[in-house]
Length: 344
Image 1: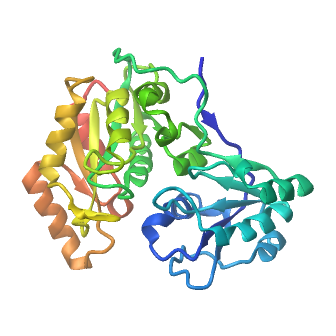
Image 2: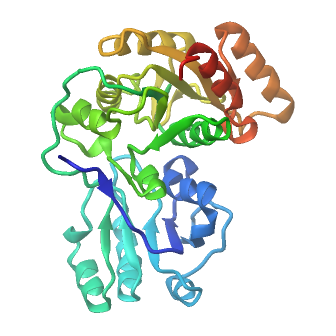
């Protein structure tokens, strides 16, 4: 049977974010800092870098002196590559004995100088975005257990954070749940998963079935979402994940201040209701009983006195629990799920 991608990373980490100016594309580093700060020794930034993850700035040498064991490339830019100017620093880290951890759309083995430096020091080169061989195609067959999938009005909008927060709230409420990672950062945090956006298109739904196999009737898989059905570049991975996950429920993730697709400003975001409706229509192909159970909103850029009003208005319009998971937790969504699925 095909197994999930597993990673065993050596902590603590030095997170490389270079000269990145937009935090949207630092989601790997920020995700690790926010959810496992105990594993992070510092950040490595270059001149001109405007993103600050709130951990100490360090050079490679300083991080090694502080006990770092891995350099994690903490960015996820459009196209999945890093600037050529970064590679000298990555090579330096490998030569210093730091494992190099990468979740982007290339293989570290493609860079001979980094390979040579790692060979000299004994460092490991770890490609996280590396799906297993011989993935199955989707069957569409009903599986036991229950599933809740995070979906979004856009990319980089909080699907991973919402899944982690929802799993935490479910377990706090005594529910039987498991976080299922489908992206590089989630895999780094969970130790296993499957990088769904690196899977050949024909096998995406089959990979999603593999991520969330048969389980006990009262068990919930909390599945990290990818992309957006409404994204002009990444909708394909979202639809494959939706069909393969066969979710009983989904949580819609949104940014309160975003009105256009990030990086594709000529495309406006869909309305909340149209996004919900479209996911129900498409999701019914493999689960006729799919329903939306909540809305997760990133309100970090709203003024404090506007946040509650925004969420209350959204709740009134949709009849669904609306929360910012990093401020409110996901307790309201959990209670709604328990009402909708009393047997689970």
